[in-house]
Structures are given as structure tokens and as C-alpha cells.
Length: 172
Image (tube, rainbow, N blue to C red; front, side, top):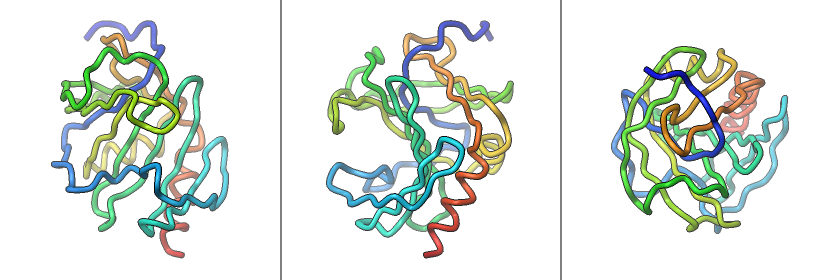
């Protein structure tokens, strides 16, 4: 695989054990009521009062990363959104790769363009891969789309603590 260079924008990724998307996206919609539950190491935890679930969010540069679980709490999701041009068409599915401190995951991303609140584009993936969850929690850097126009790097500092606070939020 080529070296990871020029990480600049954002979109979403899918992992090796991606799951078919549910009828309703797990990512909050503009009409969902989000209430701040807490903050830890640059991450904000929100309780979604509309869906009765929780998510963690971290803003970076032109974008934002969201993580949470589906309603049955069996499948996690990672959403990445940006105001930058991703080079994708709406609702296209693209093969993508993500590297978390050298651990490579592959899958499919579904992109949206300019349809989200604030002019953000991006999408989400679903995964039940415990290695992916563990790497997100315990590693330090995630490179997404390492060989495309939409490549970017996310600092994973504080993810473990944010996931723990998100789990606590789910119990309330």
C-alpha cells in the first residue's frame, strides 16, 4: 500500500465486517434533540432524546467525527462529516480503507454531499468487528481514505474515555 500522504478532508468509512444499513440511519438527523451529557479529552457526549441513545462527537478542522451504537447496541457506527469537497457523488458507494496505527481495515462507504445541516457532507459505516472497536479505543491515530482525494487523519486521543462516558450515558 502506498504511503499515507496529504490527509486533508473527511468522509466516512466501512470496515471489513460492515453490516447492511438499517432502515433508518443510526446517525442523528437535524430534527433529533441532542442534549450534552458530558465532555472528556476533546470529545463531547450527547444524549439523543429523540432516539433514546447516545453518541460521542469530536470536531476537527473542517469536519466532525461521530461514534455510537445502533438501537440494539450490537453494532457500532462511525460517521465522518466535512465541509470540504470529498470528490464523491451523493449516495455512491466506494471501497475505502482506514488505517488505525498500522492496522488496516477495508469496506464500503456511502457518501452524502451537501445534504446535512450546515452544508456538511460525509456518511457513516456500521461494524460489529470487535478489533475495530478496540483499535478506536486504544490507538492514537486513524487515517481514512489514505489514497484518495478525501484522505484525512483523525487524532484518537481520549476516544477510550469518551466511549466509556458514552456507555454510561446509554445506561441513563
